[in-house]
Amino acid sequence: MNYNNHRPGLKARAAHLAIHMSLALSSAAAVLTLGVSAVTAMPASAAGMASDVAQALKLRLPKTPIDAISCDTLGPWCEVVSGDTLFYIDETARYLFVGRLYDMEERRDVTAARLLELNPDLLAAGAARVASDAPAGRDETPVQAGASHVDLSSLPAAGAIHWGNLKGERLVVFSDFQCGYCQRLTAELAKAKVHVEERPISIFGAASRKISEAVLCAKDPAKALHAAYSGQALATDKTCKEAKALDANEAFAKANGFAGTPVIVRARDGAVLHGYRDAAAIRRFVAEGKGVAQ
Image: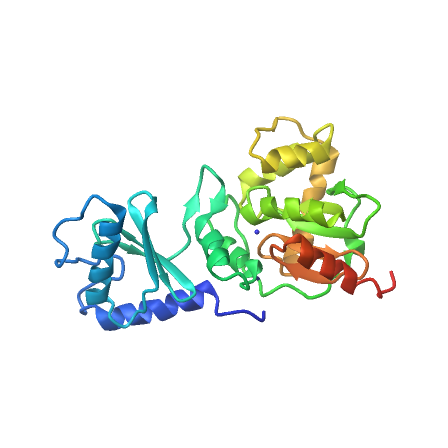
């Protein structure tokens, strides 16, 4: 759903944070079980809760810089901002969680979305690479960062959904219908007025595969694509020969190191752009390829 000239990745930041924790906690304490005796009762208001959590973290993690704490949007969890990293602590200030938080109803990576809000220059592809570690219905072989240019000639005509401005510059987009960034990207691709050749891959496993098959086998695949992104249920009991081409999409993605989505490829020359981009960035990407012979 990778995402290399950007700030340190989440895994590196999490590891850095874990080092701070180990220095701050006693040898008998565990990272995920922070017993905070300084907090005896949590106030009802989110602001009061955040204040108490801040005090608890100051006591237990004195070497970890805390930039912001929010306790009003994630139920029993408070979100803590530390530099370019997010982590979460429960309202009792006992359990601390470092990792990706997913909203299963909205099918989105909450952590990745917040990191992008906090760090607009962060490559969304970096978040997507971590998202590829999410539980999936099939095994995925870890791969290195994807290639900067690829040869699209091996891909079959089947396995693609064409939409957008069919007279515009053609961009091949590798996506997953359960990827929040892919959903957001569709609006930006439409604004950029490009010809989109969307090729689904199943980063999130068997459930994603079923949605992709339903879209490809629909009477109007382009319409089904947008319906899938909007969360509408599609008939998944129908199969078609086009759906078999999904294997080719996934083999191509794996061979070229596409471990996350979305990935945008300029059809003119095979140049690769990893991650979510807005319409302006997409137009720049298209313009950069204008002088490249097809």
